[in-house]
Image (cartoon, rainbow, N blue to C red; front, side):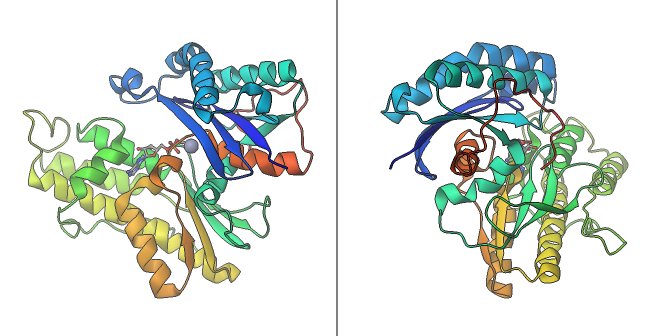
Length: 342
Ligand code: KG4
Ligand code: ZN
């Protein structure tokens, strides 16, 4: 029997809704980004984010239903991100999902945002085998999970300070390149000399698999100050070749740490399947590095298509199906949990 989930995601600065059928068939996926709202502050302002979610949620859900070609009557459950994230933002999605589920008399499914990211590669390839190691690399998180089976997650490692996406955003900010930094650095690095600055690979000195990116960020700041290229690199339009080499070298160091940590986790756990998810998985250098590592180490690496890497609701639906199939319904008292750990 065909099953359809309407999913809602409002954990950070994207208001998103999607309708997904039979685990992985995306009928519609609408994402309203607030990036223009937050750009002038150089980061997400929580109060502004929740206010914009309130304005956008109705139209975004309506558009997702309309584009899906099936009405609200054809929806069998409503999935929503209940955490982690910004509490005011999460609450907007949770309230909307509750209202729709209650009105339609269908199950409400509470999804962890990180589980959503981990399920995102399955939207492109539903048959990925388990066990797997999952790297979640976004603006708020950089973690490695062991997934022995579908729906099971054991934390293997995390960042001890900044998330990788956060490091991209901070480095772009300190060089005056704009916001959000990830896509900007990705673009500026293309064709630049990534061996120009030998930044140290960001790995822990102890034997743990944890990541750390704040030292690398500080190294970029010191170099930029010493060379007088901190802030305002983009003033006057042209960005100098040196700045492009610096960000390319930074990007290479981040990518090396992420690939290295993931390979070590696979080796330690004896795993051959890798899932890479989260906004930073959009990065072209990272995608290239993982496809090379896959060939070299004979791993099966799965990175979602770019539209499924950054925050979206289709991935929340994909995770919601696991809950629906297992009868894990949330009650009417569901609350947002800004620190929900997977
Ligand atoms: O998953 P996501 O949309 O939101 C969170 O859950 O955090 O990830 C957003 C992060 C931002 O830090 C952004 O700079 C980064 O992903 N990002 C990228 C790229 N596209 C987005 N980082 C590197 N390269 C990219 N192409
Ligand atoms: Zn995310």
